[in-house]
Amino acid sequence: FPLQIVPIILCAAFLLILPESVRSQAVSATLSGKITDASGGSVAKATVTASNLATGFSRSAQSSDNCEYAIRALPAGE
Image 1 (cartoon, rainbow, N blue to C red):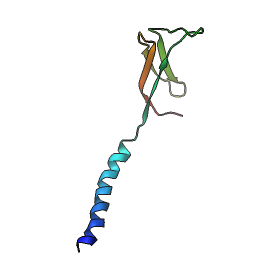
Image 2 (image 1 turned 90 degrees about the horizontal axis):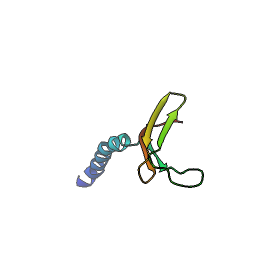
Image 3 (image 1 turned 120 degrees about the vertical axis):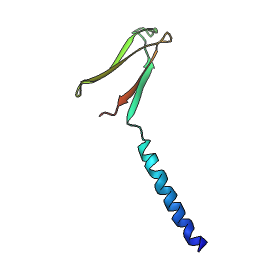
Image 4 (image 1 turned 30 degrees about the vertical axis):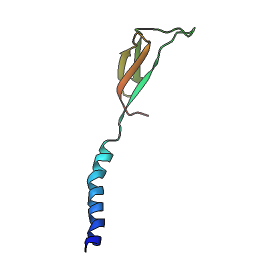
């Protein structure tokens, strides 16, 4: 009897954990990088905009003093 219940418990545990792992899949992205000019020099405080022309969605960020930027929570796209 105890050996028959172990697979049932394992299946139940798997079914309880599975919805959490499916829900935790990312549906957004982060775009990040470093801004440089044509000569390779760093550009601080530049505005960077990510746009989806099909939907009209856009989100902007400003580069830091280290010339790095990150645009977070971008929706999944094509």
